[in-house]
Image 1 (spheres, one colour):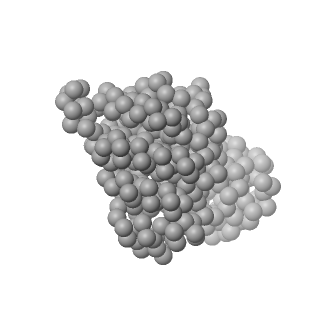
Image 2 (cartoon, rainbow, N blue to C red):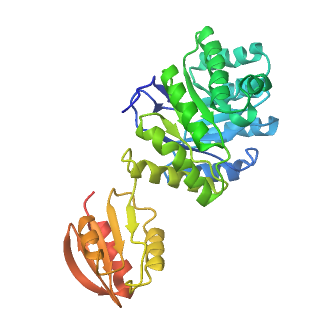
Image 3 (cartoon, helix red, strand yellow):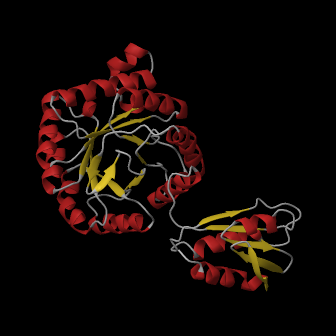
Length: 350
């Protein structure tokens, strides 16, 4: 069940208010290395990223910001810690949103200065709380940096923003713990009407990070909690975007590009299915048609599964049958299968 939140706009991309869940990522380059950062943002955009966050840790990064903003195909959020002046100057430079943890900015006076600057420009602020950077007094009060401490900390920050009559905010509670992240976000979704950014902090490397992130995000998304997501990985951030779209597709929330699925193989398989599927994924990566593509490797379930897909391939020993809209269109030798499959995908309407 959808929990409808207030809408905020980041560079024209709506988050919350019933809008589809937005996919975002963060650059891993040094922001001061303008060319590398702009190249990475372009790659992210090409793979379906809709908003990008960049770190502004120092003056060099701040000086690079105008050129990045000029060339970025995506709305840019400046990620600021510790130095409130960097936030204010980033706002002046024209960023589309700000992410801060009010607890490490310093005094309320400094946080208020950021709020006022964002208010003048009409841009939203993401209030971010991570289990690894909670105030010591909150950890002592609740006995751990768990969900209770996270929610209490965030609640204080939200009330302060509301006292300043600033409501153009989105919320974020992240932990390395899957269960703490789920619990904290459920509670906050019931407390406040603001859009929520979902993710884990320090999720892990490619395999483990994806598993952890899906375990945390899927239950929340299925409950209608979460308006934008990032799957944080110790990996090329393009992989974060791909994983986010795979998750949204699996949950039936959004679709982008081909949905390629294949059987796990067994002793009946008479074709090098792993090699075949990887090559199909590689050569179809740029095709954005919303199609289900089945690549199957045995005569038991293969033909039936292939028929159910928009386009299907059922492999055999030295050959394969290709289906389109449930009907077989021919038998082809193994070395022709990929070429024929690509041709049929391109011919398929949509």
